[in-house]
Image (cartoon, rainbow, N blue to C red; front, top):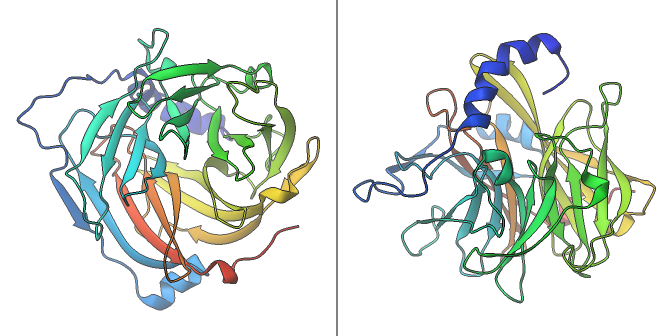
Length: 336
């Protein structure tokens, strides 16, 4: 989204609205957390297959809410009970049962940071991954270019700000964060390091928990031309689905996206990590600013893939969308 100075001039008032917004952590008790979950109209099967490739779109919904904490989701984590935990860009959390999954009513919450987080930049969660042992989470904060660890009650227990992330920018930081099966951690910067580079993103790999292993090694991620990295989800076999996004037009806002795949076993410090394209989230589909992805294995061998969009707290111009995709991992390539 930084490729055009003219575009930035048009969008700058919107950036002020979204970046400067400071939502309340206490909401009126008479407001429901979610007012409605409205199904989206879907194109015909042939059109979906044309753009989504191996993925089957099983459903798409718009989540409507007047609640002051329900907006702007940039990270999505699946829970063992089938619910999803979504993190927004002001440190708020929504745990909810997606359509078709029985569960408790949706519950909002917020992160208790160890150090003062009065500004949006200080609590801007853009990526998250779960600790299977404790039920806590590691969170990537792009305003601070740090990784914060929280317990199951969302209380911060540690933070690391690696020097290797210090130049990642205030609003272009660690948009993707994942814990690998061997205990290593991967994070990828949202944008490429310069205007002249359209594909290669800075990335880091930590040998273990970033809090106790704060000295990562650098590598680069190769994605499609002029797309931003916005999230990633690791499959049981070690491959990663990486969600990417591009702003097409600012007024009204129109976005497109990509889902690509990469093999985490091929990450090498100092080298380029290559990906392969899987799906195009084109504007002819019910899309918005998709920034969150989660992958959940199913009993039938397929993978459920959830996508969620960031409405930037601008409910008139943008929507909070939730997609349910499924895919057979045997149909996915193994990039080299």
